[in-house]
Length: 375
Image (cartoon, rainbow, N blue to C red; front, side, top):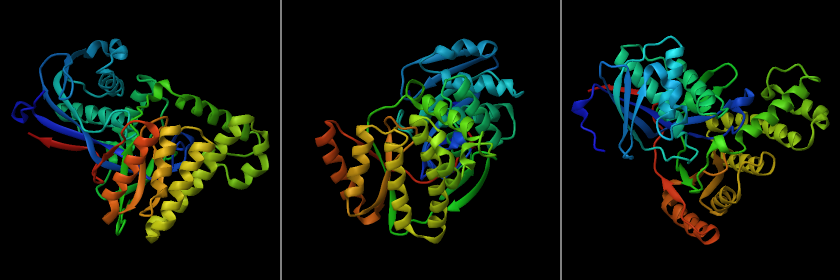
């Protein structure tokens, strides 16, 4: 569907995101290091004077009408459920939800691990704010969007994706404390290097994967550790205490908790490396993170492991790892800018030889989160 901007009142967008490092620790109260992308979901919206939200997409032939008084009935929709859940919880939080026409245009690839769902949720709520004349509060929108993803879409996610989508800042990473929901913006200066995002093209569906199982394992780990150490969240567990009491953790729970403890340490080291400009160190941390996600947390799979390994083998690459929930999706690599095209070609050609189908590369800048434009 083509969009004629003159037919709409507002153009509202929210970002997809990368996470430089700090994977699967946001829901453990850890600090993570995401950045918002110029890949985004854009909502063209106008009020329609009814109690209906009419949804259409630029990339789909589907059209869906949501009843504002009965949004829960949309939970089973294949298309429109994220928008319905966002509207439902925004209304439950005491905000106005006005009838409107929305066209949604998403450039965040679905199933890529770049948080298309968060971009959809955040932009939908921001669009509802815009037509209701409400002030945009990015942090509140992020929190309500997370609630929609957890309680409507069934993905027991942390706050990182929605926060990055809503609160991103151009050319900055966000050192986000997921326990306190506070953020420090850190300038991104990669000098002669660039981030390269490559999609394994194995789609993931977190609600159907072992993502929720990993959450349950870390929650069990926390419950056991709290018997020995005074902590409120798993990210507070020190390496010394893990070494002292980790033997109390059964089977795979030991591995999951070890990943959380070590990944929290890597985020702190990555912060120092980014601020001091030590890109070699930053790249090494990315590779270590991937190895941990593969061996200890077991959320990679052959496609992501192959893509990360092929990236790491290139002389122009300082480090490479999976990003997102895993079980498919993308890798992020730090690559010499002058060698980016050669890097992409080498990795993608070898990936197809080993896996049997094509990977896909994306170009994206580090961008702002929510953007509202009056048309």
